[in-house]
Image (cartoon, rainbow, N blue to C red; front, side, top):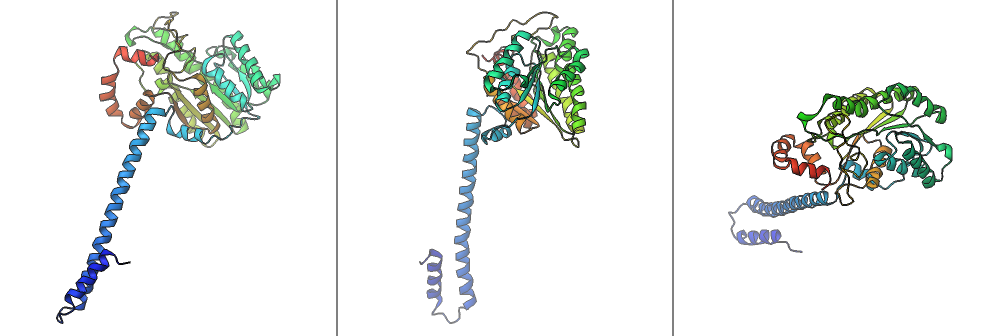
Length: 365
């Protein structure tokens, strides 16, 4: 086939054929130059097409992320693999298991064959959760153990650990899920409320983990899971005691992760956003003994507890270091705060974080 470049070369040759004084080397040079120009043009067009394709892919991907993503991209990738999550012969101890995330995580794990130790304060609710786990999995009664206690009662932690080990002889995964929430202006919070939240959300969790960690170190393996929050990564307004306690968890357990790199002990930090959970129903204020009084509505814009715990089970199965689980636009704010911190704080916070809008967002309204 006669290409345009070859045709130009033939024309050039025919044009100078009758000129005896025209050097042959110049004819060859002209031909190669025209061929090279043609190839260069083709390469430039190809590169332009590739750049346009990449830009369009990024735009489409970003649009899909804003529309459909409800977790960080790493977690969504592993969840999309749709592989069976195998927790057979694994003993998982879940605190705060009588309702909300702890309850539904128990259901998700028991379906995958886990043996469960369930802890909480409400014995009646905890018993109901244990019975439901047996119904779901058809497991033997001895595969579900109830260990009711208050996480801030440090004196009973050793006894509770012994109870779980006496029953199962091992603990493979500790899920620190117990906690309470809070709503109040920074200036109106009694220091006793800060102490209360830190005793429950931080010091109870840290102390129980230290007790179980001895067992993990003896076995040369173990997995610590901590339910943090969006407030553990962002400065959630009007709940400074709660936000401070969740930030503190990251400090403690990131340190633990660093110390355990040679011990085969993993740490997973789970950061859920607004989820349908009894946590907000038990929310305290800035005064000791005072309840916030917020009641969830079925129409609230929050993630379902089942979806949250399904993603959480994937994060535990793959031993992810940290995962973000929440709906938009909060998930987008996660990424803004993480990768564009100055833009986020100087622009987004000032434009979006007024009191009315923030309270509606946190309540899913």
